[in-house]
Image (tube, rainbow, N blue to C red; front, side):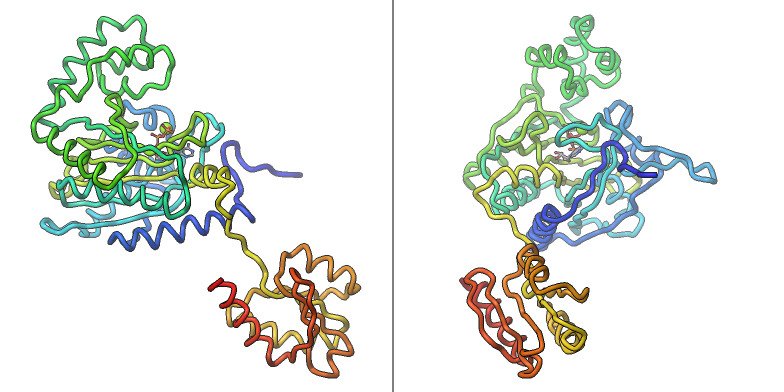
Length: 425
Ligand code: ATP
Ligand code: MG
């Protein structure tokens, strides 16, 4: 019997996995440069945590959660996003001290029951970060600039930051009423979900993906005109600094994001190189969530990016070379004695992090050389009877095809020098 991966999931392997490792390593280094430290939380949490934080009327909670009962009847859910778990953990582990700022990042799989399509999976990976304890607009900026700097670092171009403010507890209620009234008159034209949302949670209508609803949205009064002075200032300060930093951004006055916990700043980063699923990173401010989850009243701001989508854009941009996992040296070994002599040397090289592969399967020289070629190795070391007598190998540079004898004892030094020259070049 043969098995297949579950619908909406995928296997990631070489050469794409080397790209993923590069994307992850670059992100981690830059997150640390921005002062974030990692937190690893469980893949599943109590379902109530997500209902409470993401919001009952959101797509995620309404239809996308992988929820189940364990053997004791506990209601659990595979995490659909990272923020809720990180904030739950930060509160539980006392990582949040008022007057201090906590900066945490995470990386790992998320789960949503969505219709699988290009750029949309049921298990997908996110890298994200949260900055808890400040309502200063410079923290919003820090989050947006991290994304901009990261995408520049991995060589992505053609990106656009879409920015908006969804207001705060002071100004949103009034807007909510205006919106509710407006939607009442349109209710016949809205999709079934939105007819319900129009009454219970009208802002959610702005995030509807149904075409007929999207048409109505473009006539809707925008939050922008209802922002209180504090929210207006917050947004204009961010705008001014993004201009100063020469970031390519636009104000999208209907941007609301698919989670209820946002306040004030929301943003998305879009790529010109993707189809319908063109948002590669998104985030915003959530000033009430920490307290709502039982923590101290601490404002926060964060983001998450989708690794599959970032990887896809990066692969489409042929101009940037994809990091590979090339073997440094491939050993072609002829006979038992050669295998014995090489075994110790190979282990030593590997202990020095030199990437080595070897053939121990008694193949002809010709087929071993074919494997060496396929491996993409920079060098091949041939060890046969003649070489054994001299305790050396015939070392072949696979690119230039040059060959020379080199003592087995000198291999490690030679490869290290070759590697550092390549690095500097
Ligand atoms: P979308 O509008 O594409 O559904 P979202 O608003 O649901 O996105 P967020 O919850 O903000 O997305 O997640 C942040 C990022 O995670 C997205 O910008 C995207 O890159 C990625 N992402 C979200 N859902 C998926 C998915 N099902 N498959 C792959 N990546 C995803
Ligand atoms: Mg979604």
